[in-house]
Structure formats: structure tokens, C-alpha cells
Length: 145
Image 1: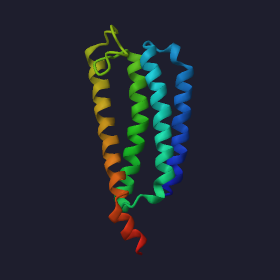
Image 2: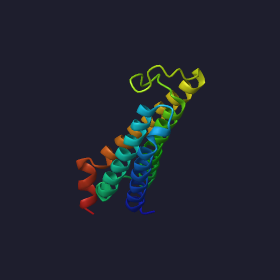
Image 3: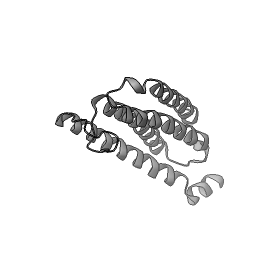
């Protein structure tokens, strides 16, 4: 699979999703969190574009490349999706500034909290793998071939 090209595609797709979310902000129950969702889509799309642009410099095993790719997609799309869900539900346990006095149901708070924790772990895992793939020794070993 051409991960570079797929990451560029998904980066543009998520960037567009972020822009469209921005157009719909006023229709969410929590407009501040909708603004956050808009920004998450745009920023995570840009992040995927940046990773796609440097993908040829990342030296990972095939298995680690697959893990990094899917962690990136789950983390970035998930970040937009969970933030959008929080905007729809009006949850605020993890972001009281953007959801003051919304009063979402406890199960909704738990769902959004679990979502943010899981996508946070995915992005951290992807970042560690990318950093590992960009380390000096990996580049030297690849260039020596």
C-alpha cells in the first residue's frame, strides 16, 4: 500500500470535513465545542498532510508502518468525531470551558471521556512510532543499503 499517498488523501479529506463542520457550527447544541470540532478537523487534516509529506523519511518495519498508519487515522478522525459528538451532546467533563452549564447525562460524559482517552492513546502511539522511524540510526541503516 502507498501509505504516503493514502495519508495525503485522508489529510485533505479530514481538512475538508473540518471546513464543513465550521459551516455547520451554529446547528450544534454546543457551539463552542463545534468550533473545537472544526479546528480539530482542520488541524488533524493538516497533521496527516504533514506526515504524508515526510512518510518517505520514516523507517519502520512493515508491521510498525501498518500500526502507525492505522493509529494515525484512528486518532485523527477519532479526534474530530469525538469532539463533534461532544458538541452534539453538550458534554463538558473534559472541557468545562467549552461546555459550561450544559448538563449532559452521565453516560454521555463517560462515552465522550472514553473516546478522548482512546484517541489520545492512538495519537501518542502513532507519534512514538513516527519518532522511532525518524531516529538517526534508522535513517543511517536504510541509507547504507
